[in-house]
Length: 201
Image (cartoon, rainbow, N blue to C red; front, top):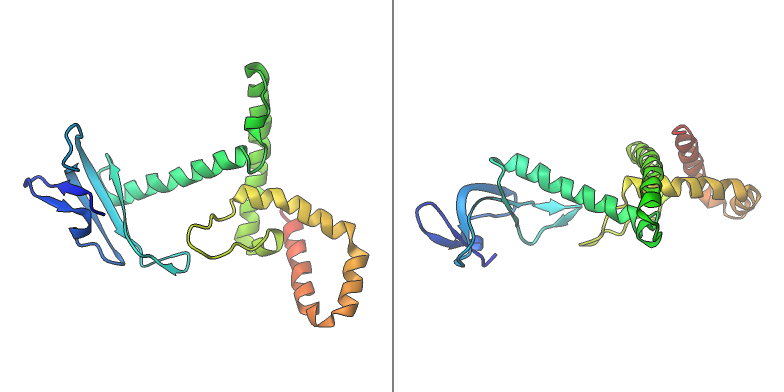
């Protein structure tokens, strides 16, 4: 926020002085960033959301871009998170690709298989999210600043485990329902979620 911005008029301003407040946005063309030499001109996109995932935001964000309008810059920046999410899934989040230590000729074949499996799980996870039954399939996400949301791949991957567990312990579940009758309403909702999940196959 204390970084200096130089406009075409040759005036330096700190980013915090550009006038952004909660719920507002800006887009400046051809500005110089910082007083240091060696940096060319960029377009500057800025936005301050009132809330993010249910929480009030404390400060705006700024993006240096070569796009010509705010909407395009925001859309491009959002895609970055999807790419980072994919790499996380490919590595520690799902297939531990970095731990395979395969030779290049075998690694390329493994990547093809992973791409097919990843696409399948991602599409299925998206269907689960669209149906609104994600909370049954995966552990509920904690709502605090910086918490990463579950990717569609993560949801799709855990769908198989969730359905498998239900098939493994039907008698145990019935016995628990006999003991805890007050949970019957939740049990019925869970059964409905299972039927919806099965419809995605």
